Length: 256
Image 1 (cartoon, rainbow, N blue to C red):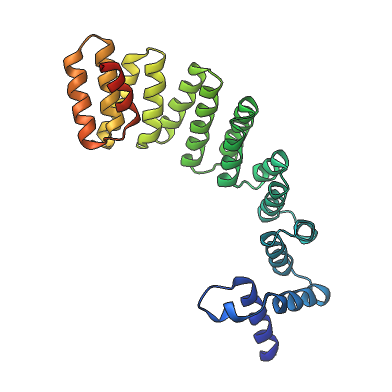
Image 2 (tube, rainbow, N blue to C red):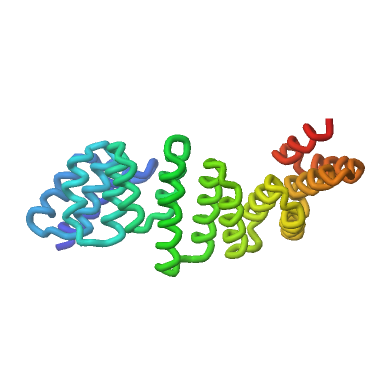
């Protein structure tokens, strides 16, 4: 029995192969032979999952799917099938699996990849995904991030009011996330909602006093209102704390 466990452990090490450890010395072929034998005589989910992961990591997609579909319905199975579909270039199918899992990180990454070619489709699916996360009572930060992505997609479609609504929702769910505050403030500034933009920039500064984007944003609002002196002072402060600020570059252009 101990010998059997030892062989299985060594076979498992063959799939880990961490550099500088014993596992790096165990040939992959040995691990495959042991696990394929186990799959014949004592099939188990961890065996199928290990073989599917190994095949996927080596680009053996048909083999990976063979083992993945044998797993019982579960988020892990959906995630594996999504990764296999994505490796085949089937982004829409991959997203359906990531949606079901749900695999938030891979879903958002794949949706963002749609932005240059199909922003409307990305926005529609992002909103579906966000609603799904709410139904699952996912952590508010994940739902907030979904609103943020939806705002980016709406902005790419030149729908600023929709983008602003999404950024507002993100900031409401995660009020101390400066990223959401900045995106909301920037969008408000673009649609000339200067009072809202100013309030959001100031909230960002309350969270992070070294937020150059917030300072420069306030400068842009001051400049639009005809107060060049305040705008120049805000630009100087932004340059001190965040010289690479995107909004500072915008303010500097306006000040020329």
